[in-house]
Image (cartoon, one colour):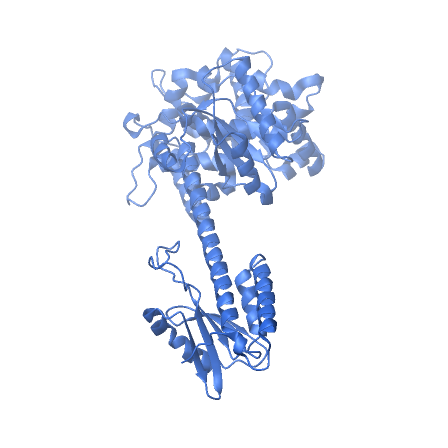
Length: 556
């Protein structure tokens, strides 16, 4: 075994020339170290000046091999690799194997000269000591100093790549943790969400505005950083797990109301769109943490308006809440409708309980087929849960009517439902909406039917307020289109056939309806459930003699 120490003793070459070549080679390798894939680039350079270059793990495994100018004798390289564990154990920084007519293998530890504080810990929790550089039979003999320089540069590149992998894994873990917090908030589990957020920072405030920021998928990371800086690090920013163009930000909201509070929302929209060009943002009203899901729906509806607005931002224009109009009677109806889920106890501990089923229902109503990405479950698991929900509730969740009923029940009950406060559920009969509404319930029963619940003057005014923007200007085309769209179960081809127009014409009409309503229709979370309930309310109030001009919905 021998080690070449001084290249200046190479016969036939002047020391000044050797030093110049060494400096030139070091500069070239340094430039490669600043480019893409530096480890491979430096190894390729060494391979071109030899028979081959390789990285060998401290356990003797060949990590990567780069053939050089001449055919590579892998047998000799393998024999040299088997000696690396012994060299590493002895702490030998460099060695030469072979010679005497056989190929020569120069071995240099990339971690030579580092403080001996134990092996570096990799992101998987194991140990990953620096590998060894092997250069086989240099065509133009490499000076020992130049080989040491190459090993130092490779060591830096290797540590940089390892650090970058670790950074990406930490960033991915942070995103997953933030998605978990968002998911807990969306289903109303505030306490565990706060515990996780306390470790990640910032802390979750009691009152938030939910913002949905839309940008190009490749700029989502840049936009997230800009939003964080624009809001002074106070925002909880999460890439949307369902839509690749969306970021969701929870921003602390001041505990006040009035014109000043509305101005703050507009200023927030201007701040974000000004810092992140080419983005659109929808801002919700202030909501408590347990109502994050409602805030998300509001922000999503506001985004639908912001897409075509001149400013690129829009705040949610609050309408009268069904929750406030229906009051305790609405909560009783919702609690009894959802009682089969709230009281559900799975036969196996690993199966979803009632609260998880309701979370699945809410995700399905908001995201349709993309709910499995939001819930981080398999498509088949989602289908199985929806089948269980159908059996428990007696609702056909493929129909807009039954979806709207489920949406109303979840909206009214919110996160106030607990399994301990569940009334005894009557038998569920007949699938479909009318079979599950308890239309034949006794007058004294706490579970009143849906139409009886909706047939009040206040709900009639709410319904007309919801539909009034579709009749602006005296042209009811928007209302006719939306009614036909709902009757066709939100299928555009069926709607086009019913109206006698093209599919693109229907899509354009619904786009104009989105702008008029200030709500999203074609993408979920969609306002179609509220519109169905508004039309159903007008029909119910007409049957009760509370209005003279019924909406004519639903068809007989």
